[in-house]
Length: 178
Figure 1 (tube, rainbow, N blue to C red):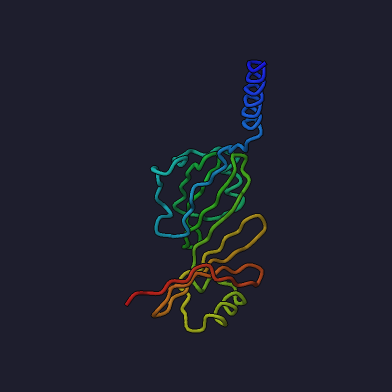
Figure 2: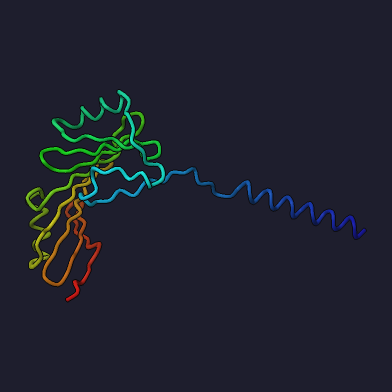
């Protein structure tokens, strides 16, 4: 009787272990390499990051790129997992564009200055941050959305804000040391 009970208990434990493994969440490697918003490292290829390598692109991706962007210089391609990142200069500004292997544009990032901001966005930021200077303006287009990431600075602080659909959100605030 005891042996029968022990074998059933072991069978139940084995079933639970196998069942919990079957229903466990699985990660399918859908990770994206960190894309820095700094223009200092735009053209360089970081071979130490996993999943990033220099590539030759296919005609579908090149066609999609040419359809989206005109008159670019310093075009370089990197492969990030199963996607293709174009790093280039357009109108004298650094830019990045991520494409799927089928040539679908995922997002674009344009690096600029205060002069590149739309008037209403600039006015909104300056109305809240009166004493700060805008040092960088980064435009991110993704999935029909336009997001501005704006860096501000004064003598005592560094601030980053995000503007989307006329809504301003402070994302970072640092005090400078003396």
